[in-house]
Length: 179
Image (cartoon, rainbow, N blue to C red):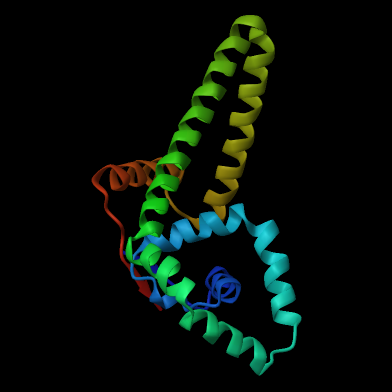
């Protein structure tokens, strides 16, 4: 179970952007995938939302939306799509597509690293050494200020990734408790 705060900047941003109450999310899956879609389409969504927030409200706009909700095309097209759980299917497809792309990127990076080791071994070792050194310096600084176990802190991302894959495989969705 995740314990999230409704007053956090991320929750407030999500609520403002989608005009919804984040406390309505009872599990982490729709909230997480909603954020993934938000980040992917933020260059399109944000300007539209800002324009919508700036424009004056009028009763004509409200009446237009009520008319659309009562219209026959809405009842014939939109309502069956919602009842068919289209968004659950789309979310599942996005979920597996996301992990497939991440896996392909990781394999591509590993293949590139192996190829570079054979073509330019000293440069490759220097780059890997620099990356490891920078990572250890950052981890040591964080360790000094957080006073947590250094090995526990380094292992946290790997435990999170492992838990994420187990949850995906077993189709688990963690609960959210909003403060």
